[in-house]
Image 1 (spheres, rainbow, N blue to C red):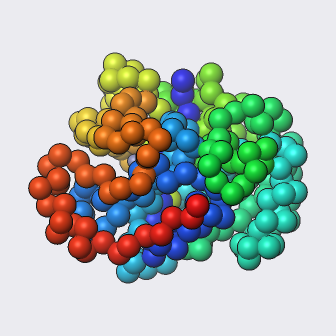
Image 2 (image 1 turned 120 degrees about the vertical axis):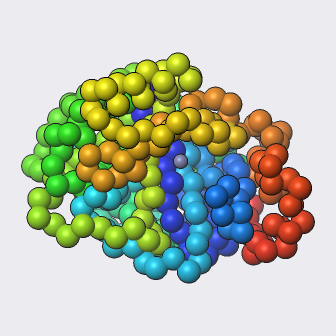
Length: 310
Ligand code: ZN
């Protein structure tokens, strides 16, 4: 399986972030942990019931982060799949709950409802035929037939698509369509999280990463072997500087900056989120990696309390 593993973005207030993704969008908070490089701040993970690869949106809530600005060299939009028949429900829900959104539009023949989260992160719901059979989180207040099914994909805003297209080839993607200045790539064998659109915007202002920006995109590797093979090809064929493997507890990761300037990660499907708490209790308590467990009391005292929506 190829495709997106997770998307990580920057938020402001963590309580507002949890409220929006659980109560408004109906995702499951599948892991509540800290940023391993900055344990005074949260790292929050939202996904389907199990936190399956291809459904996971994670946040670094940094209360004092300056507002980001969209532009070249950043991810422009992250999109989710919903059943085609669900878009009307969502448009109505966004009006009711005061979510900033646009009118439903067509893109590559698909109906798209774009919206932003409270920090200004650009998101979209894409109506996909057959998505109703895909897994979702049934424990939220969004009726199951309308629930979000995981990622559709992401749109990158780049000066030039060519070199990045080569890198996407290594990550399991093929070019499948063009629409104006946008080229669409699709992951082999994946529906969930399988789309990357590159919008070429030569001469546009570069983006500035901050609150409301995507920090990085993580792509799937089935296991360590596939990840190592991808690394070798990225280094040998595309001259990418790829880090060594880093253990992120729930997956094992490598990072590099793709030719357009966006941070890409390759993350393994294993071991997943049930490694340190029961699958039916995901996200309920603060999870800490072994090396931080000894500092639990101190860490918990410094984190602002969160209240999850039922
Ligand atoms: Zn990541």
